[in-house]
Length: 200
Image (cartoon, rainbow, N blue to C red; front, side, top):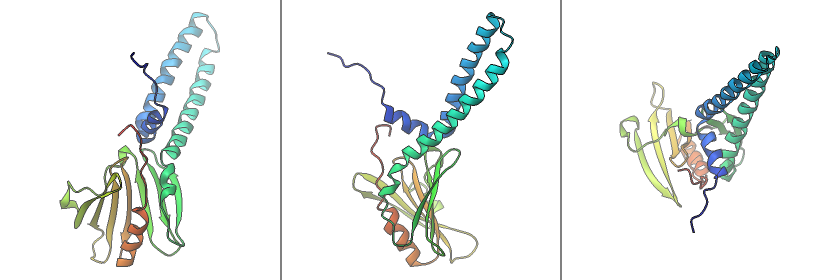
């Protein structure tokens, strides 16, 4: 007996979260298609208030679409709470246009930035060794992780340390100056546990 196809809601949420702009394009397309139908309907019945009502409807639907996209971005990245922070560090969530962003930092200390989602790419990538001073791949549990060090600025003191989980395109990066900076960053971001979802 063949099983009936089902809609994977989690995969749908993940798709919108990873493809912010594309997701909004899809929502906008549906809205405009609906708007054309509304215009056709009101023109058929010769309703004089068709266009004002249409304009208000489009604005409201777009507002709902942007709110939905923002909420899905937060849902997609909810597992950032799996990161075990060192004393004094605080995790701050933010949402960008195409990716999910945020930071892990402490006052007058290291500031680790996050860039998460399909549009963010891989900040550390063993397939591009020329972009790094050094880069390597490691397996942690069931997930791969890439760690790379890049040049930063014009001096030799500051470097950019990047940690990438290719599963979900989760990137952590920070300007590091000392071995302690490197140790603290790796000690936190390598405790991250990527979500297991069916869309990768």
